[in-house]
Length: 417
Ligand SMILES: Nc1nc2c(c(=O)[nH]1)N[C@H]1C(S)=C(S)[C@@H](COP(=O)(O)OP(=O)(O)OC[C@H]3O[C@@H](n4cnc5c(N)ncnc54)[C@H](O)[C@@H]3O)O[C@H]1N2
Ligand code: MOO
Image (cartoon, rainbow, N blue to C red; front, side, top):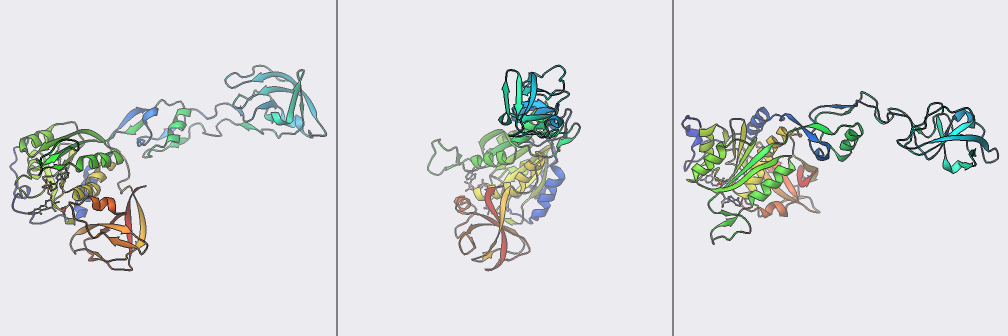
């Protein structure tokens, strides 16, 4: 615990914000303070969606041996020249090669071996005549089609060359990436550690859904939403508590080690029970408190030791917006993911004016109708259904008064890329 007294700016209770930081100040603070976490070795069975922390190069070639690409007979392609329906050619069958059980021995001229797809093609022969053009009887093979040398044979390293870089650091691993690593014989991969995120949900009035509540209490909308957002951004919920508005419980939960990121829902503003900003200033650093944006103007951020802390306003839309602008970016960066929003974007024409105020960034929930983009009429920061009725949102920059009908805007769809 720091002995530093709270500065004037850290205790805004019942005083209000004298000034608010620009959104860019918050984003810059995050970019300076959230770097990719170190790597950890993870079983191949669990690497999909994780971010690779070092390049993977091939210590073996795939395939490691020339292998048949068809079921049939391996022979010398040059000896099949001229074979056809009206010119069947004969070979002596001297053995067979099966997957994992190669033919061992010499193969004299005019000889062939029976071979199955994936089986090693022995020394001396170089092509495979597919079974469709071959008949075997009493140890003799008759073929009715010529094959060029090398035909129907998969060659050493044609899938993955020895020593080549197969997957690069920073890649979010796909199921087929795990398969490729497995084909190189790698049981584990080094991936960026997932940020551990602690959710502290404040508010004496807040009850878990399913619990009984008194008439003036409310159900907790932010917890489930934040859990989903954290998972979307590659974080792990380290712990999650609803702890009312008692400052000593909040302080204890903030000071406990074990999390890379702390998300504190509620108590971010200037009310008498809004303790989080002051506690953050006391325990560590309150870097930003109050942002020139709407909603989420009481949002804040800072750190306690190595833990990055985000103050998310209690109003659910503000909570979502502050998470998306700030906390989500930090979690994605810590986890090695791209910083930008994972929302699909589309360009569209404004049908009804989107109003904003110069000097603040506006997060405007919109619908995409047949006529174009329309801001939602009912869209207060406490109305979370505005974000489920909306198709997406438009961000109006601080230097703009909004967008008139007919102008082109970028809509961030509430749909993940
Ligand atoms: N005098 C001022 N008052 C307020 C200001 C201001 O600048 N001056 N800012 C307003 C804005 S904007 C917001 S947003 C809120 C944010 O306040 P807090 O972060 O302190 O949040 P609370 O007071 O705890 O809660 C606000 C609101 O949200 C409800 N809530 C809280 N937690 C949850 C939850 N988990 N699930 C659903 N709803 C929740 C809570 O009951 C309140 O109704 O401050 C304004 N005031
Ligand atoms: O921004 Mo508050 O963030 O409007 O409800």
